[in-house]
Structures are given as C-alpha cells and as structure tokens.
Image (cartoon, rainbow, N blue to C red; front, side, top):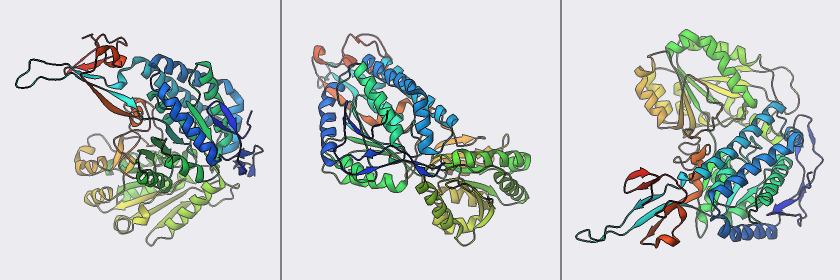
Length: 527
C-alpha cells in the first residue's frame, strides 16, 4: 500500500507541509496518491542514521549481504501486479516493459549477491615481508577495496526500476557495504515507495542494521541539493540530463570535503553506416533503425540520435526509406508532460537551425503526451559549423549527417562530445578501410557496436555503460554490471599489521577462500 511517506531507515515519516502527486501521462491526469516531501530535519535524521549504520554495515560478511540482496529481489517479486500497475500508471509505459524492467532489476540484485559471496571483487593484494632484504628490509603490505560510506542515489525518470530505487546503483552500493539513501524521482514516487517497502522488508528479514536503506520524497531539487551538500554523504549516483548531473557534480566539488558524483548523462550515440553496407542492405537498415529510434518513445539513453554516411545515391535512398519507415510506426506515450514538453522544445530548436531539413515528421493526430517521431538531415559542413546540432533531443528524433568523404566523417566524430555508444555498420572487410574513422569513434565513446543497434544494454561483466564527458562524469567506470561496484569503494593498504586483526580477506589463512594476488601471483592458497 502506498502511504506517500518517506522511509527513514525502517520507519516512515511525513513531517513536511509540501505535498505532490504523480501523473498518468497516458490518461493525462493525476494519480490519487499524495506524497510528502522530506524536510531538512528528516534529511539530517536520514543521513545521520546512515552514517551510524555504516560503522556496522561495512563489516557485514559477503554471505550476509548476499542474503539481503536476494531477499530484496524476492520481496520485489512478491509485490506482483501491484508494482506493475503503479509503474504503468506513473509512466505510460506498457506492461511488458514494466515486467521486463522488473526482471532486469531482480537479475542485477542476484548478480551482485553472487559477486559478494565469491568475494574476489575486493581485489585483495598481498606483498609479504622480506626482513633480510638489502640494503633495507621490506615491510608486509596488504591492500583491498573498502566501502566509501553512505551513498545517495537519484532515481532516473526513464527507468523507474532498473536505474532507480533498487536499480544498479543501489544494488552495487549495498553490495560494496555502503548504506543507500534514494532521492525518489517525483515522476514515479509510488513505484519508488513500493520498491522501498520491499527493501525494508528484506533488511528486517535478514537482520540488516536499521538505516542501511532510506527513501526520501522530493518534488523538486531542494532535497537532492541538501543531500549532496550534507557532510555525512560520501558519494552520489545519478542518471539523467547533462544539466542535472553537472549541477550535482559542481555542488559536490564545492563541498569542504569534495565527494565523487558518478553521473550517467546525455548521449546522441553516433552510428556510422559505411558505403558498401548502405549499398547492400540500406533498406533493411532503414527498417531496423526506424524501430530503434522509436523504441520506448526514444527515451533510452542509448537512442541512436545521429546517423552518419558518405553522400551519394545509397545514402539518399537510405534516408528516404528511413523517413518512410519511421512514420509507419504508431507514436507512443512519453513519460510525463514535462518530458514531452522538453522534447518538443529541443526538437523545435534543432529544426530551426539553418541548413537542417526535415525528411519525416509524423503529422497525423496523436493522443496527449504522445510524441511525433522526426527524421532530419544536414550537410557535414553545416553540422561541423553549428554545435547546436550536436546536442541531444531526448525522444524519437534522429539526424542523418551527409558527409563529403571519410575524412570529413572522421573530423565530425572527433569533434563530438563524449558519448555512451558508437556503432559501425559495415560489410565484410569494409571496416578495415576506415581505421581512422573508427579510431576517432573509439576516442569518443564508452562502447563500440558492430553491425547492431545501440538500444539495449546487456547486464554482464564486460559491459561498459559510461563514456567520456558528458556521457558520464568519469569515463573509467561503468553504471551497469558487476564492475559498477568499483564506484563505491576505495583502496586501503595495511602495513605490518598483526595477522589476527587483519580483515578476513587479507589474513594468511584466507578463511574466505577468495582469489588474491600474492607476491604477483593470482592464487587462492594460504600463506
């Protein structure tokens, strides 16, 4: 049942006077539940509780954390249709998408549970002493990853489950041993509360300390600002716009003790379609990319917003086919009136630029909050000269850039901002003739795709979901997969410590039986 209250650890609280409701974009009306925004006092209480809890939670063994993570997954599934119905009512997204995202959320939690049971993620490294080394003795030095402290996670508007309350950031931070405070997204506060109730039940069921998880409501930016500025918070996770992510990054940098903000932000995900590929399968590619551009109403961070080809008959034919295919697709609902408002505004700004041509624009009547898909095209020279054309239009929008030649294509790619993904569409043996273009692409993105579409992010250890700024604030880290845990930890070395008071991960007898690097040898043996 949705109460509209905040979770401060295991306790619910609603001391504030500021309230709000979520919105059903498909029905174009407010949902019934009323949510109470957290007060400054509740924020302080939450962070102080998390800081106190961290002293205990950081030392909880991996096997117990795994029980907690698996219990969260179980409790989310136990919410059953109630969660799906609330999700759909707050997003306008279909039931199939809701169930798919729930499955991904549960899968992420179980994957991190497996990770902390296995234990090698702490990267235990041991260099044993050499007391008789000349000219100076060598100390015993041992290193491992340790959690940072309380983490604030901002719920994402476009993924109410997989990137929000119990999403990848939260799962990774809890696995690392960090208490989590979620700043619930106002567009899906009901979904967030239901998932929060599942996390709290799981915490109580597995005897986790009170304060290991909290969820705070917020209708605007004030709660988020106070959380980032609070000295008890030690790191931030964010998925959203460049403007929002950069604002949080700047706030965190100005603190007396600056903290890391791991933000995954904007991306137009350039796609390079090489000439032979256009010639041999341009029609097929047009159909494939029309579906990719409109998937989820274009509300994926990996939406292909920029298609690049070399000017010629094949590119013209592809553009015409893409334009014809995309208007055959029925428009769908965007997440919120504010989201479609931003889409229309950013699209209008783009199409008003000199030299840009609209080749497809769905012009039939659509329901309120349903987005009209649009394809545009521009000459490579014009694109290079106008940085406004380089900006993301979040929604079912894409731009085809007609490059003069491979050299101009390379120049365009090298001048793009950092991106999450880049794609190369090639016939067999063709890509090897465009090594400079591909090298430029690799320098601008976090993931390169060959003969596919960027939409869809596989959750696996090899996945990198991040990229050079502004795709993310730190291109060394991923927001997806088990290695995302590295955002919430830091290395700590122990020099000449007695074996009996070392962490279990570093003890001679290796009681956890994890793989460790001992004197430059990977092994699970005892010392």
